[in-house]
Length: 219
Ligand code: 5RP
Image (cartoon, rainbow, N blue to C red):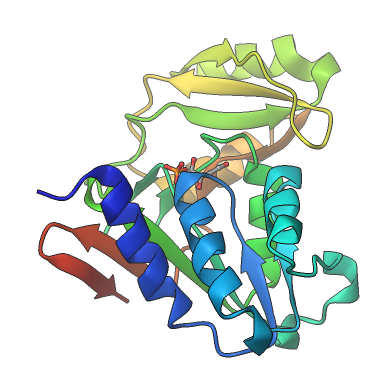
């Protein structure tokens, strides 16, 4: 049986096959880090990358890949965004933000033409919510947002972490998310929420899922 790191490496390699040129959107996390290693091998093909976090930007620069400001990139040039997920369903709805980069990830994903989600087999779930849902909040709204999340049936816990945007993360435990599109919108309506880790309104276009029988491509 392959180790989780071997599965992550295999799926990162597969994702590199989608790199044809232009500018590549790059996610955050351990699976995305394996993808950066693969991207470095084909860096001569691309014009640069857009990073979803400071950590990813630094890693890309360390590999000699130019990091561009998203504001200077036209959507036509950002063909793919490659990122991992904490959970994904067969409907391509994702729960993300375990690494705390959810807001920038969602922004880059919104601009990219195609979201390629790279996961090992442990991330595919029937229903989202076993993994605590990260919600990025403005610091002064922390208690208010936490109370509102309790009303939605969750148990928010403050993460000991500051985001790249200077905000806080509430990890919401105990949710069974049967309606991710509606819940994503509902949580974003709470005053003080910057964004939440449900990626349902803009789902993945391609799921590359690393299994013991090889990498499966699901569209
Ligand atoms: C970071 C994320 C990551 O994509 C998610 O946490 C998965 O990470 P990993 O590949 O390390 O399991 O959303 O904010």
